[in-house]
Each structure stands twice: as C-alpha cells, then as structure tokens.
Image (cartoon, rainbow, N blue to C red; front, side, top):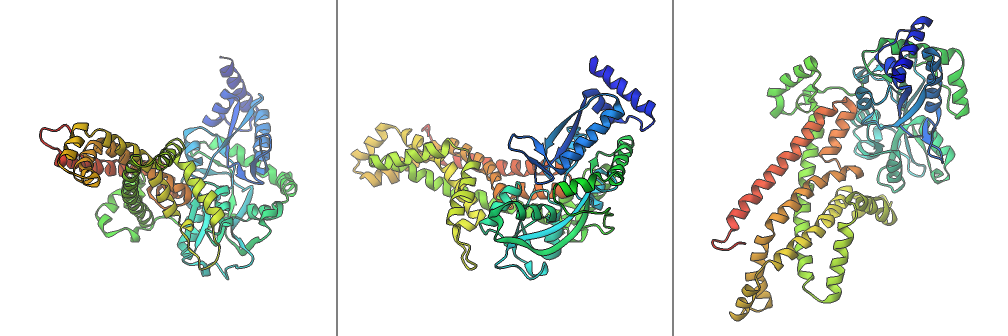
Length: 528
C-alpha cells in the first residue's frame, strides 16, 4: 500500500509540474521506486565493473543523471538498478519489462527502429574498426574476403561486414572471449567499436603489438532505447537528451573518460542488412510468401522461411549440428567400448581409464571445452601463416571435447553391458573351446551390446543436445546460427521455437532408429 501511495503521489506531482504525463513505464518506475537500466558491463569505458563489483562508466553516469532528474519529476527518491545484458537479450528484457530503458552501444539503424523507440538526439556514435597485429595488417576492408574476423554475439556490425566484405565472422559470447581468440591468432583481427578499441590500446600493455589497422566503417549513432508505445517516457528522455547537449553534460563525460567528442549524428537512410527475399532457397519458395505476409501482418517473423540470409545461416547451422552429432556419436561409442574393455585389463590401465571416467563425468562439458580451446589450445597455438594444427580448428576441438565427455559415460554403459552377460554363458563358451578373444567376439560382445542399447541410446540423446556447447567457441551450429539471426532481427521466440523443433526432430529420428535396432537384435527367449 505504501508503494502505491508513493506512486500515486509521484504521478500527481509529475502531472502538476506539467513536464510530462505519466505513461505505463513511468507508473511502473514510480510504483517500484526503482529505475531498471539495461547495459553491457563489459564495454569499457562505457559500462564496466569496478574492483568492488559496482557498475561504472560513461553509460552508468548517464543512467544516474536520468535517475536524479526522474526523482525530481516524480517527487520521490528513486533507486537505480543496473541489469547486465548482451546484444542477444537486451531487446527481449526491454519487451518483458525487466528493464525500463537501454543505455549501451546500441547503434540506431532502420531495422532496429522497428524493434524499439530510440531517443533523439544520440548520446554518442561510433563505427566499426579492425583491431589487428601491426606486423601483418590487411591492405583494406575489401582485402579481407574469405578471412576470419573475431567478434561478439549481437554486434550490429556482424551481418553488415560479412555481407559487404565476404568475411567469416567468429562470434563469441563476449568481448573477453573474442579478444582472447584474437591474441591466440584464431582470426586476422577483432571487429569492434572504435571507441572501445582505442581505450583498449591505451590502457593495456598486453595490446602493445596491436593497432587499429583499418579506418572506421558503418558510423552510426548510439541512442537510449525504450519499448514501443510509451510517448510520455520518450518525450521526457528526449528533453533530457537535449539538455545533455545544451548543458555540456556529454562533452564533460567524453573528456572525463578520454573519448573523442561526437556531434549529433543522424541514422543512415540506407538499411544495412535486412531481408533478402531473392536469396530464399528454391525448396522454400512455395511458403516464402505466406511467412512474409505472416510477419507483416502479425509480427511473427519466421525469417528462416522467407529471408535468404536467415535461411542460409540456419540450415547451414543444422548441417553443422548433424555433422558434429554423427562424428561425436561414433567416436564416443568407440571410446566407450575401448574403455570398457580396458577395465578388464591390467591394473594400471584399469586405473587410468577409471580416472578418465571420473574426471570427465564430474566436470562440466563447457568448462572442458574452454580448457581445450582457450587453455591448452592457447598454449600450443602456432601463429605461423601456413600452420593449421588441430588446435586451431574450433569444430575439431568441440568434437573432441564432446566425444571425450560422453565417451566417459559410454565406458560405464558398456562396462555394465559386459557385467550383464551371465556367468554361465561365459563358462559355456569356455567349455566349447572358445579362446579369450573368440569368447569376447562371438559371445560376450554381441550380448553386451544388446544389454547396453537402452542406456547407450539415452547417452546418445544427451550427446546430441550437448553439441549446442560448440557455439561458445564460434562453431556455426544451429544454436549459434539462430542467435546471430535473432540478434539481427529480434525474432527470439520464433527462432527458439525452430531450435527446439530441430532438436526434437533429431531426437525423434535417433529414438526411432534405436528402437528399431533393439527389435532387430532381440534374441527370442533371452532377456538381452
């Protein structure tokens, strides 16, 4: 009751002041007494975590200024809560009401103006630059065709640079992982905002061998973003934004954080990216029109079925997932069978296998993947221009990690299968004159495989789902591809539905195949 009374008092004070009416977001802010601000806290100097874990930076100072001004408007003290987001989830959080506004390096583009309302004028602007080693810089952006660039998920530049210059984008979860991949030599350069790149070069001695090697491209304004449908909040924030310009607030912050001064910048009239209906695969031509009309009429944007870029990216991701899953299933089964046989061997070998099983089963697969890719791989990496050892191939490292992880479970599955073979059966084989290997090949192994099939099938189902961790090292499987699509088009719900249906279809095919195999191998009158 107290909160609602404070909210009512704030709304009355706001209306009495004549500054703006209280829209739905202002009412929510007043009712909770909290201003929720979404930002990326890995984007120094705009927003980053101080040693004590507090969010600080250029954007945080702007958020604090908004909180102070809103407290005066509403006639009540407000708290500010910073919500850490990434490019993949910030618009989703805004639509869900988890945050009231977004203040981050959110470039204004015609595509994004369909998703959110941007506050004008902009508070900053930046373009894409390439951070690379000084000793071997590319000649131009056009000279990068076919080469790999490191980036992060949700970057506004990924699609535009890939489409215009024909590069391969290796999008990692964040700037930290992307930077490590660059230092390891897994790409020719890191695609990032100019301001962030300049500060990195200035602050960190470990970047002494790197520089901005190409001029900025795709200069775009950064603006505060709010959800559609709240003209009252938009009018209020636009007034604050104009006051920041007239009162010198932005210039003061730019000086404080040693940033280049940026004037008001209008959004480019020509869209970057967008739909590519001409590139829709022939097999989807019959349904492309329906899904395009569905998107325009209802907002349900299943872009995979009517946009050529989305279709190519998604179905290439599905094929990569299939390749990864089939390879890992075969290798993990081989590891499991070999490990189970090794547990019947000499004691040192048995201890080695059991140690491997305990280590791999009791540590997360994602931690193992990061250890192999950023740990062991970074130590072994040869940055020579002609070298291509196994630890530079993200697909191979992901396949090895997944195979080893689920192979440890398969060892226990096959070991249990061998133990399920009746002792009397083994003794009968011995009585019939079978030697050790003959008994294993003709008697124990066929029966053990039959006993292992149910548990092995469960392990393979888990393996297929586990292939999704490969996105963390920029393997373009189905989850990685979907995240790139929804970061560009903000069709998160639609893409997640397609991802779930894809995995469900793969599980159904595998389950049906295993069930048929069990029926085919069933022995009449035998429980195995």
